[in-house]
Length: 293
Image 1 (cartoon, one colour):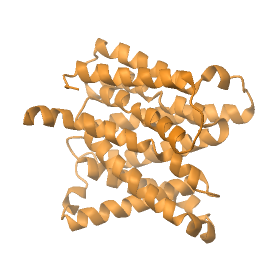
Image 2: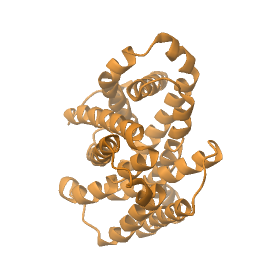
Image 3: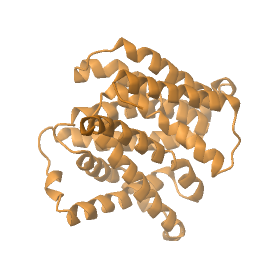
């Protein structure tokens, strides 16, 4: 039983982190009059402080010391900043549906790149779960309706969305690559701290009154998402990158749940079907990898 529990743990952590990530839309709905870069900065700042305080109290600061492959920590921070800025810019120009659709093209890049970069054996059994997951995202985003819009802003949104998906996919591969050198919380700390440097100009442009008005929401946002990031990174470090990229697709399912129940937005039949496809893909992966569910 302990062996099975240890084997199941990283899968549970990735799923739990993805579910918590799904609350991002609720927080963004509550934050007013702030740019995407400014929101991301303060979200990361409060999370960064939380990690530092936790490690100080638990005497775990030693694990933050940069060791091998420290240049990849810089890459992680850069990728995190790029993913966040591009994702929120895609939302601004083309709407949440397109942004989600393109962000979660990440599993395609991971499945193409992970075998050659990480040396993971290409598993033909990954094809059907990947296909189901992508079909699920397409159904959720309803691209048939969305692609009728061909304006300049929409095209900008497509470009930003594609970049967010690519950078997210490379982030997953990088996390997996560093698994033997840095713990999940150490990766989160450096990823967050380095990203702050890229977001700083946007934060400095935020009027103090606007910041104070949103302070309570920003604080809760930062703490919640950072907790999700820690358990997600910890979990994804212990499983195949290809598997983790597909399990992460539980996030849009979670996001839709909160969107419908908290924000009271309408639920479509295609959305339900898409969620079913994604959950089926996650179940197939867990069975393929020998996890009892």
